[in-house]
Amino acid sequence: MRHLKRSYNGMPVKDAKARLTVVVLEQDVTKGTRKDPSCCAFAQACKRLFKGEAVFYKKIAYIELPDEDGERYVHRYRLSHKATELIMKYDKTGKFPSGVGIDLRPPSKTTSLEGMRRYHTAWSERISARKRAKNSKGMPPSRPYTKGAPRFFDTSVRNGTGSMHLASFKVENGE
Image (cartoon, rainbow, N blue to C red; front, side, top):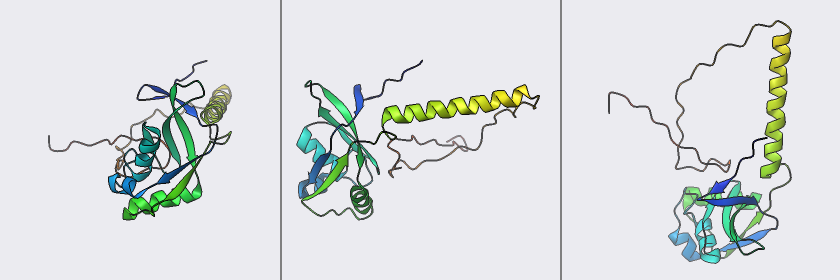
């Protein structure tokens, strides 16, 4: 079976095992950039506290922290509902109440990296079984895939899934 290695800037990514509370100060808010997951006030607070990289999306955060063995890993956290509201408010207004802490939680069993891998593996096996069943009954093969219109993503807004989408641009008039 194929096993994917998850990494961020060459560092391995792990699911967090314990809760973490990060207090955002006024200096973090002034240094922060709205709608930028790696330079927002929350990421600035983590950089100040833990001396490592941090990326905050709407529901997931990746923070570089030392592990039990002293090596640094990127830990994956789930944000509380209150933290998600604070992020959305900060992205809209650029303001954040000073001295407020945000609660970072370890992912649940189903939202962990391993849990999501198991779910998607089972899902793809179910789809393959359906296709095999259709073909064995003499059903016509499915239509060939045709490429649709290009999709555009706004990279200046957090998408909330914990993954970054790159923008695709359509070149017109040879420009």
